[in-house]
Amino acid sequence: MNLNKVFLIGNLTRDAELKTLPSGNPVVSFGLATNRTYTNKAGQKQTETEFHNLVLWGKRAEILAQYLTKGKMVFVEGRLKTTSWTSPAGEKRSRIEVIVEDIQFGPKLAVGGSRVGDGGSKEELATVSVDDVPQGGEEDLVDKDSEDDFLENIPF
Image (cartoon, rainbow, N blue to C red; front, side, top):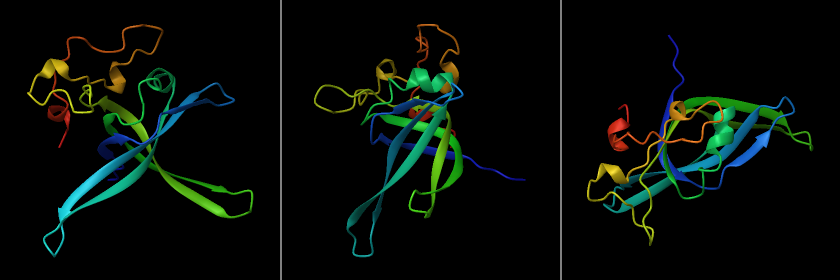
């Protein structure tokens, strides 16, 4: 049995970049930063940041690109893919990307940068799953009846 599954919660490091391939297939790429906080042997609190490259394909990429802006918190579910190429200088290059299969937006930011929802109000959270995004030209992208808390949706 094989499994290639990734779950990440972090903040976008840059605005999404939407491109259309010659085949007409839209693809959006964006960066995500995740933090790990731990205590070192000296008892000092340390934070380690990892940066991830993410890719989202198809009509959903086209629609969600406008919402994937720097600083937003997202929960991403996907799979790892290694892409290899040869640079113009003839060097072999490779990069590990997360192919996004599902994405949910975290709490909205209030004025001043603090997170809305600290009081526990579920109505203040915006969660959008990739599966909730219409495939066609529908205008309504967010399920208005959804009151699931962002952290309650994490499958682990």
